[in-house]
Amino acid sequence: MAQLSDLIIAHPEVTTFPELEELVKHAGQSGEMFLEFDVKPDFRDTPRNWQWVLETAFTRGLDYD
View 1 (tube, helix red, strand yellow):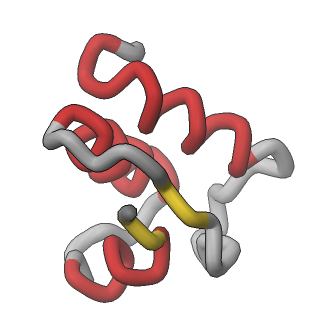
View 2: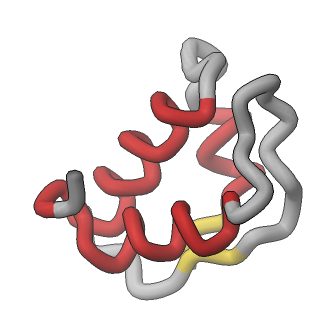
């Protein structure tokens, strides 16, 4: 299981929500089965529907654009 906080902490170079979305796509593609939303991303450009966006990115992986 991937935790969103672990992904954010492990990749300090990620500074925007679209970059985080790409990171989540890679996590989904790499074989992780679940993504736990244990924190809300603290980026200026985080949309209101951030959970739905990240869940979709995780589920569809790199095929999602």
